Length: 394
Image (cartoon, rainbow, N blue to C red):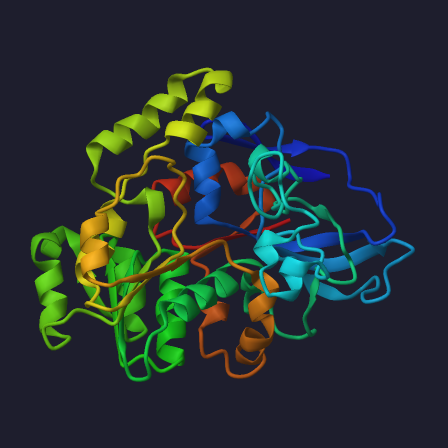
C-alpha cells in the first residue's frame, strides 16, 4: 500500500509499504478514505527527528471503512464507516473509565514515561504506524473506532479523530462562565475550532489572536473579534482589557504551544538540536529542552485575575522558566493535557448530525491526493496558499 513516511527533517515521502494485517483477535483493518495533516505533524516534520525512524508512517487523524475484523470483534463489521481516535486506548482500564483515554494504562508508554500510545507519532508514543496511508491496523476494535453514519461527507466526521475533541476539551478546561469571555491565542485548526465551540457553547465575547491573514479572516467571518499581532502586539493586553471592563477575559486558550513566534534564544536552542546526532539530540530534548513561551506568557498577562488558562498547544521543554510569582499573585488556574477523544464523543456527535453549526464541511482549506503529501506538508509548514487545514485522500 501507499503511505506517508518520514525520511528526515522536512523530508516526507509517499512510499510503498507492506499492507497491515490482523495480529490480535480484536484488531480491525480500516481502508482510509480521509486523513488530516495536523499541526503536531509539523513538529515531526521540523523538530522531533531524534524520536523517529526512517520510514515511520505518519498521521493520526484518519477515518475510513472497516475492511477486515479479527475473530474477537463484535462491535464493528466490514463495511462500517468509522473514525479512528488519535490516542490508542483500550476503553476498559481505570484511566479510560475515568474519561482519561490519553492516559490509558493498557497502552501507556511506561518505558518512555509518556501517556497512551498514539498513531503515527514517534518512539515516545509507541512508534505505531499512522493513518496517512491507504490502510490502517486499529487495535481494540470493540472500543476504539467511532462508528459514524452513512450519508454526510467525510469532512463532517473526520475531525472527531483529533481536532474536535481537542478543541472541545480546551474549551471545557477553560471553564468559561455563562455569558463570559475567552481569548484564543493562535487561529490554526485547533484555535479556530476552539473559537467556534466557545461561541456555540454560549461565550459572549470570543477574541482571536494570530498574525496570519488567512487565519484571521476565517475567524472574523465566523463572528470572532480578531486581533492581528503584527499590528497590535505591544497594545494587545490593554486593547482586550478595554473590551472586558478593564479586567481581561475570563479565560485564555493557548492553542499555539511551542510554535509561538518570538523568544529568539529558545528558537535557536530548538534549532541547534537538529545538528546533533540522534543519540545526543534525543536526551538533550527530553532533559534540557527549551520552549518558546511567548504565547503562554501572553496568556498569563492577558487573563483576568482569578481566571483560567487552558493549554492545548503542544509544549515539549523540560526546563521552561515560568513567571510563578505572577501566576500565584493572579490566582490563576491552569489546565492542560492531551485530548481524551472518547470522553467528548457523545457531546460532539449531535453537532455533526444536524445543521453542522461548527462548519466542519467547509473547515478544510485543501483536499489533496495522498500522492501529494510532500507538497501538502511543505505548504502547511510555510503557510502558503492560505493553507489552514489539509485533508489527504488515499
